[in-house]
Amino acid sequence: MNEEKAVEEQSKPLVLEKLEAAHADALLAQDEVRGTAVVVVRKERAYAVLEYLKTDPELAYTYLVDVTAVDNSRMESELMQFDYARFMVVYQLYSYQGQCRVRVKVPVHENDLSIPSATGLWRAANWLERETYDMFGIHFEGHPDLRRILMPDDFEGYPLRKDYPLRGRGERERFNFDKQNV
Amino acid sequence: MGLDFGPDTGTDGNIITTTIDKVVNWGRKNSLWPMPFGTACCAIEMMATLASKYDLSRFGSEAIRFSPRQSDLLIVSGRISIKMMPVLKRIYDQMPDPKWVISMGACASCGGVFDTYTLIQGVDQFIPVDVYIPGCPPRPEDLIDAVLQVQQKIDSGALPKGVSPY
Ligand code: SF4
Figure (cartoon, protein in one colour):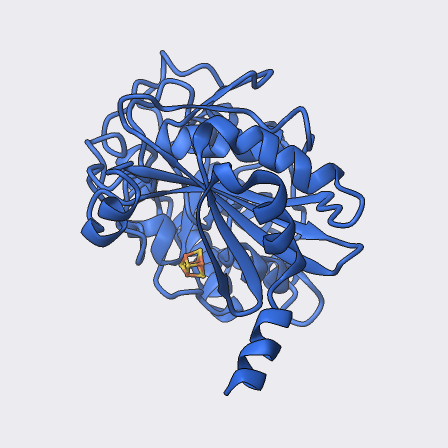
């Protein structure tokens, strides 16, 4: 039994160990899902953690795979866990050096939708954060060009939020072709 | 050749009697220049239709033009989002009359399975469609059939759906 435990401890991903040592106060939760380390990070410390993950020579998560968000407003269990933060901004990182992934999740409250932009760390964050802004209305502070990227510029609302009706609010029937500048 | 020969005039076929409309329509019908508007998977089938195996040029429609000002058959093949619709409308408006429109596949015709906030539920709400093709995606034979139907329409002297009244 003890031996098994020792093996388990040993196989704990390096990134979790290092984060625990360097940024213990920033971590709200940690987990390992099918070989991918998952950490939930306090918003105020999110940028510092991301920077650490990218610049630490042992970790070197130089590849930002994806930025997206999750609207947990209908997931009571998730909401309770993180102080009723409605949104969870998710960063997927990959390290070519360690050939491993890490998922960084940041709870964001509805009454304060701003979160520091990661564009200073990865230029790839530019469009990904624009998409997250477009779909969820998350505000990335310090983003050089935070505009909608998929929906038309004059679109109102954030369609991937759970309270947005699936069939929209009539956008697909109403058109003003004169107004639209194409 | 698709032209009606007049009654036997006893001239050994050296003279064809017809009307100017017939001749013009005969020319139009056999040289439709399609403007492909491929936005999704249906466009792949459209490409197959144009390529050597199905070879749309057998029916005189191989002169694909990517400029709407040089084409008279708009093939809408694929999903049209609310952001794309003004573009499609603009392209349709830029095509010179007379012009015909084929709505290819379930998505272009009625939104298909994508009953969502961002997808136009049928382009015929905004531009006139002459021939609809069902299917997801329709096979190349279906597109060929649609082109032939457009040809029949032209041959019969029917006006395109979107003909301007002037
Ligand atoms: S009808 Fe089917 S094949 Fe055609 S664009 Fe829609 S989903 Fe794709």
